Length: 153
Image (tube, rainbow, N blue to C red; front, side, top):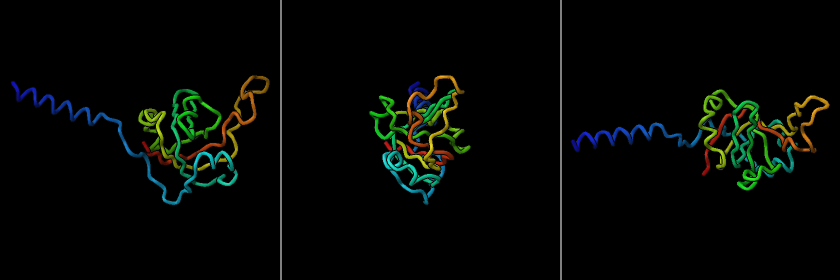
């Protein structure tokens, strides 16, 4: 009987390890990206417009219907949902297939690589309806073609 209990414990431990979503990175790390901080992107977005960048910040992934994903400079910005963010707009096929795993990174520091765009995504609200209520509420630009996400903490 003790051998059977031990075998069940070993199998359960192995299965729990296989089910873990603990990972270091998804996607391929581009060696030729420019390393920038969120503050550099927010302060001088035109300097990095159209360039492949890597930026570290706090993840806020939302893949629900009409969900929007962001990267914040600090945990306080994430916690209080400040206007200091960069929108994460489009993801590679490899990353899109890992949405559940990415969503588990919310509130954690990550490194993201993709193409930065200085202009905010146009507000899709039809004319005459309330949408974006103040200038700059669409954030400080966005990152598209995201090809790499790495957990930092």
